[in-house]
Image (cartoon, rainbow, N blue to C red; front, side, top):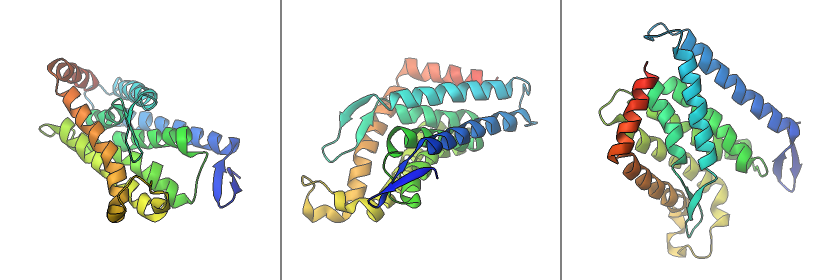
Length: 226
């Protein structure tokens, strides 16, 4: 077994962590193989290496920055230092296929970071981690759109919130804090999740619209495209 059960919840054990790590590595290999076999890349020999390099660096930055919590919201939920952006950026650079694959790897990292020690049901884990964070790859659909980075980021963050909210209604209503207005209890999962997601999104959009940052991101995009 990959987990141990206790009092109605589950705790990931060493085998479980190993299995998740193996899955993450396997998905990264698939990204490499997929890009290597694509026929529409301008520089087919360089494309898979570039993709894997940018993806690896972006996921590493996202994971590290997810530990940098700049504010904790009153009802719960942490605002991190642009951690979601670097996952979204992969999709924007390489499209939805690579974007969703990279976001799925990130969902595994997030689960290992904070979710592996407490699981209620498989669907709860999917809502809180695998579906929610994988949704960040939706930015890939806006790869070649005008203002695609901003629009893709906002759509991806919204979709992440949808899955968190579903999990909230199904599993976490009993954990509503005392400082949340009882008259608004019906919208607690929405308010809880989008309160920190929206604030982080606003901060992130402001940062990436700064002229030096915008110029740097455009340069990175040109490098990624070869």
